[in-house]
Length: 252
Image (cartoon, rainbow, N blue to C red; front, side, top):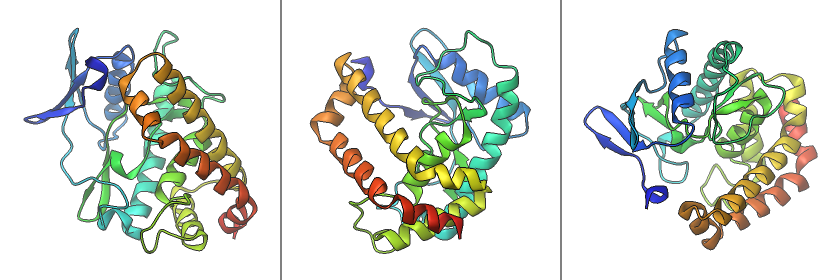
């Protein structure tokens, strides 16, 4: 069925099924290139069934299966690239048409276009450095801190169930969160709000997953069946428990 189809490569392009928000994502990608942001795919058109964007060369993966992705070079370059994306997307937001459609609801204040899922599995590495961002399906207007919260959650990562040396344990995770915050140039206010925003962001993700599963979207039905929601609930409790420590570590 259409909802279960994954993106696939065809030569120098990536194809995926068209969605109601496809035209908005393509408008964003085109605007990013006009504003000299070359680290995102270029839109290459869509019809009634398929959309096409250019392929970004490089390696990808998650923190647990890609050693390079765990390096401080990858961490710092990811944060710097997210900052550049946000700054460029803010220019697009100034001219945003009111009839644009996004998969996730817009958040206020609308400071930037959030990527919505800025995680290691949605970037590409070249020579150990994050050089590109992929998969803009969850892009939507919102405040910087909304995107930053999920990015730090994934890149630190602020999670209880991590068994990889150097990523496990609160001290390691706070150290990596601080590196990300510094490389991005997070403000003092953004650092103070980060733990609470991570919790709010994960709660919103749970609500989204549950609603999508209720609507019959197979991907999210499987996620709930496989217990992905329980991981997020445990991480919400973890970040809540250590909120003061995380905030203090970011503010040092």
